[in-house]
Image (cartoon, rainbow, N blue to C red; front, side, top):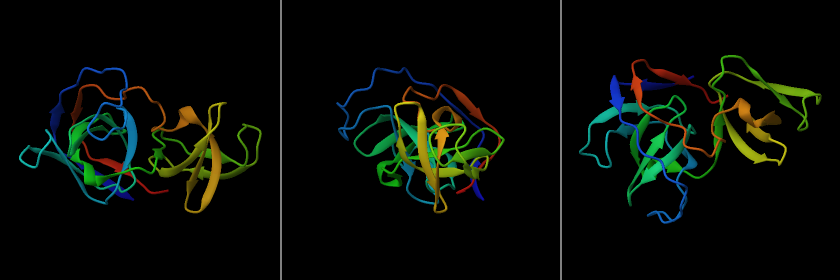
Length: 176
């Protein structure tokens, strides 16, 4: 089990623009990345001199980059928290997380009637393998891969995912 510690903090929302590639990284915003390390500091602004809001303890957690400067990325997390993290703490491999509080069946093929090969637990993080044109995505966790309907996990919707949020409790995530 991985725990994301959260400090009581109000995080202001931001105005959203259409995705563009004229960013310091050259990649479009918004876009998804994952947290590269087990421990990542979330700050109120782009710099170590800004207030520490909370600490993520969830390697592989999918986050959506919603703004950036040359060294820092403003991210939206699966619980709606907005914070700034250093670019070195993010990684390109895409992951997804099951946010609903019931297990999700992984199917052997991209259809509801296909054989169930495993279940993804609530708050579990999985690697994203690929998605098809019919809204099914293949994920992999603990060496097992299977297909899921894309709306059943967080980390796939390309629209901006965050607004204003008030954090009051720790958030818990797991790797499987």
